[in-house]
Amino acid sequence: MQHRGETNIEVAHRAVPVGPAGFLPFDRAARESEGLSPGTVGLAPHAARASGAGTRQRAEEPDLLRTCFERDLDRIKHSRPFRRLAGKCQVYIDPDDDHLRTRLTHAIEVAQVAVSIARAVGLDVSLTEAAAIGHDCGHGPAGHASEGALSPFVLGGYHHAVYGADVVLEPLNLCVETLDAIREHSWNRPGAQTPEGEVVAWADRIAYVCHDFEDAVSAGVVSPADLPTSVTEVVGVDRRSQLHRFITAMVDTIATTGTVGMRRPEADALAAFRDFNFDRIYLRPAAVTQADQVSLLIGQLTEFFIAHPLEMDASLQAGSTEAVEAAVRWVSGMTDRFALDLAVHHLGWAAERLPRGVLTGY
Image (cartoon, rainbow, N blue to C red):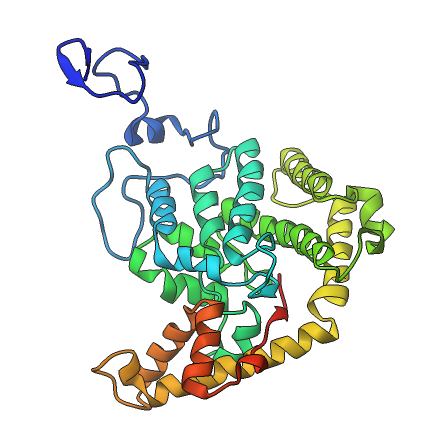
């Protein structure tokens, strides 16, 4: 037991000083009053402002040390939906190569890109990171391939961004700004209300375009030489160079214009990069075939649990509205491997018929 002053404390190695006894200059209230966000020297004029416990569906007491967005970040990191992303594919379902991305590693890479931008331009880093790591929690097994399969069972269709914010993460009682950024991160949505949310939308696209190509190269689907010059002449040929150029372009654009966006040369390169990925990776015949198979499997699993709700909850009645909602939530939360196993056990799918390999990513 190490001793410091009049207090007996235990230390890991030695007594490393931080400040005088009794000091706490960086608690939540102090940082809010100074407009500070962790990792920045101050917030931009239109950055989201943390305030007390934040605006939530269910009122809470504010935390002594953490801002409302810091609490959101912690809640998502410790949640089951976030952990399950480790078992949900990015592009390759149940791959043999452990180095290929999953939805979890994708979320982490999106957060890295988004935070790099947000920190440099004075946005709230915690809100940005919370939305980034939570943005895909609404994805079902096999990612986008499951959305079409689940859509017939959801009024208005199944959209992973909306379902993630409104259903999957609803028990966490997150701030409205965090949920808005998650709900609106997809480019086919109306768009986020905060600059942090718009940064996450860009970061998602930057991250998946770059790393899905890298994974496709590793899997032998494409080669580095296949990438068109409209991309390589602007942002380079390797992921490190590409991320640096895209992130720098966004920071420079925001600093110059005061608006979340990307200057034209890099934006055109990103669009060309994405078009290439769709043509050569996401929509290649093998990927479409696999997506059709997994969509059929997920649709059949959902129908099975609607007809057999006791497998989920003893209080549900077969075919009821509650059973449909529960089945969608149950199936959409499954990892790829769990869904494949249930297809064998409940649906009688032959193991050799299970979809494995290249699916639709992004």
